[in-house]
Length: 264
Image 1 (cartoon, one colour):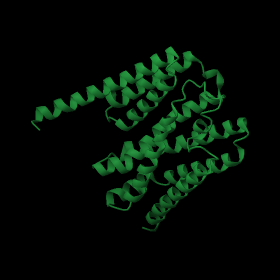
Image 2: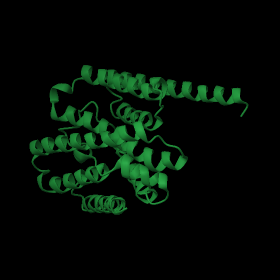
Image 3: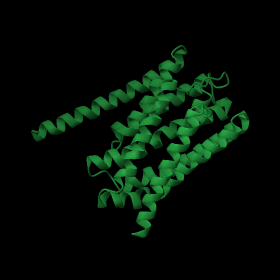
Image 4: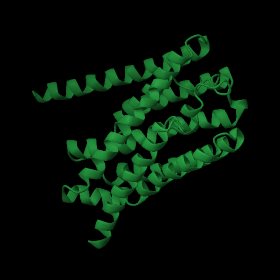
């Protein structure tokens, strides 16, 4: 019980510190947003031609992630099921992920003027963050599938969206850190790959994951809008969005047929 309480208190403290540091840096206009390299430099000439960088408004997804994480921190206290998922499913990985975000914000406060060092640290931090979020995602998927709507909203939704958006951010960071990747051909192929990935999670996977699919689609829409003047990028992102929408329609159709056959 002591360990249970310690973990839950640690989750609460980590979330409070994360939102406090993020809010402080945002309101002081030192770091534009908690989206690492991408949004801080979204308006600079160095990064405006990154073909996988989406429209700036798409980074508003961080607001949704923070709200859902707040729901998780509160939900962990409610039931025995929530207790088991928190202790064994999420464990201390959320605390580590939040700590990585906090460390990044503090470091960037001092080094954002040094562009090369900024890129290196940013990529290292987000790669590490992605690894710990994957631990949470994999453990929840394999051992703690959602049994209720509250499980889905307050446990699976925040960490799946967090994981998926970090994956998108990680790809873009590598595009910035390794300029040779930032070509129209490689970027277009990557966009098509993201489309098939989104389709896989909604149409070909045994456990359908709408949260990851929706997050990927959100990023693709932002990329298509930002780079609408570059035909291959627009075509690739639009094709991928179409793939995902097709998968969603098929998924909904199958649900309709299932309930229709049951006479519900």
